[in-house]
Image 1 (cartoon, rainbow, N blue to C red):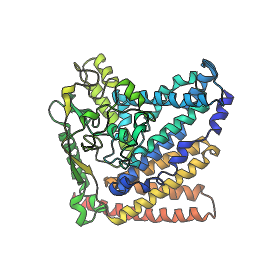
Image 2: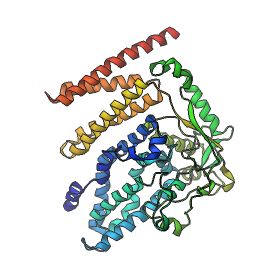
Image 3: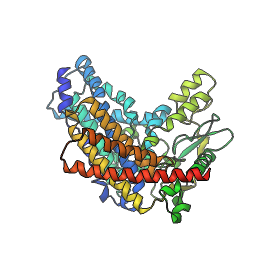
Image 4: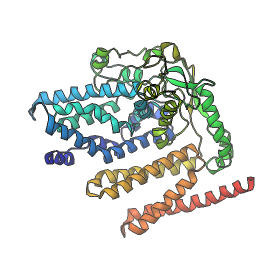
Amino acid sequence: MECGKQLMRNHPQYTLDHSSNPNLPIIDDPDYCESDALDNATSKTCHSVEHSLDRLVFRGAENVAYIFIYENFRLMELPWGSAWTWYLAVVGVDFCYYWLHRACHEVHILWAQHQVHHSSEEFNLTVGLRQSILQGWCGFLFYLPLAVIIPPAHFLTHQQFNLLFQFWIHTKSVHTLGPLEWVFNTPRHHRVHHALFSRLALSGPDMLPLRHARRTCVTSRMLVGKLVVLKGASLRAERLVWTGLLLSRSSLHKHHGRQRRSTSRCNLYCLDKNYGGLLIIWDRLFGTFADERPKEEIIYGLVYNQPSFNPFFLQIFYNMNVINKWKSMSNWQDKLAAVWKGPSWIPGKPRLGAEEDKLDIKSRDKYNVQLPLWCNIYLLIHFVVVVIGFQELALRYMGMSPLAVLGFVAYILTSLTTIGMLFDNHPYACLFELVRCLAFVWYVHVFGPNYDPAISILQSVFLLSTFFWLLKTCHILQIKVKTK
């Protein structure tokens, strides 16, 4: 076991190295340059940083479980330097990923964690950064059977390479790769997997919008679309006073406007298809393969997307849908089925929902909040600072105490959440940002190194930001008092 712990400390963190520079390969992607606004692209990169922070904290526990099984229950010891050991690791990791990915679409509680990856309304390299935090907490169980054969070093290497490969298939720029399409997962195949489609089902009276393109639950009294409208309307009255914080009068009418409208039908032939990571042969073998139809336009995202750029909210909101569905069931058998069966399952229907419940969505409005230029510049600057902080943590965390790492992680997560709230023009975003900036100034003043020019510059930036948001908050509070 001691040898296994030494392996974990010395094994390269390929995905962490990639995530610590999340924007470098994206700026050359034509899809990104044409389609992604600053808020959308920043939100996706926030998901990547959050996922990497989660892996940084919890990856050790997963590795310990794998190494424990290998050292105590392995069936054979494969030769370390043999090419066949590495080939077996490649195939084994991708086979397990196929079933993990398929389960994430066919098991309700797993879909609640995976849906964030499908929530983007664009399809470019930034979508590859949009990874789930909570999915990894249970997803590693699908890889543990490999521990009876595959050495830990081979597994850890190819699990990371498998994930890195999938980053590059999130693009519309590559149309076809010829004969490689028969064996490997390609952008053409993965576009099918991300296509928008839906099922319409009935559910409990308090159900929030459920699942993305594949299956969407509504109440017995109203469609989910109405729920979304009502939910948005309830927030609008509260935000009217706060809108002036970020938006100018000329852009006020655009607040929470949905722009870049496109029209198409749902891609029903894409339903539950193309789960492979590196290889597409698993989908061909198990009947989940579908080829792209070039003449049919593909629309991406969830049928009823949550109108938010807050990465933390998008990571966790769907779990309330699972809880509400569980509560709506009348007996324990159905309650358990509401968790482990498909997202659109209802009593009396097949595990993955009924075919007659498929729903065509004919139009698509994309969420976009119009912010003034100064606000976008401010958010971009602070986002870059957060990414630099994450890079420093990725380089130094092995030499830091666990408490210091957790504190660093908590501050970065809070910063990403606040940036998302500001992009949403959330009514309490200015208060969160004020506290965040003040916390940074206090920490540097008490614990920061002396005579460090970089830290001094950052402290000055955050001090100015603190005064700015303090004045803004006082101004908005005065307006609220007058309106009452």
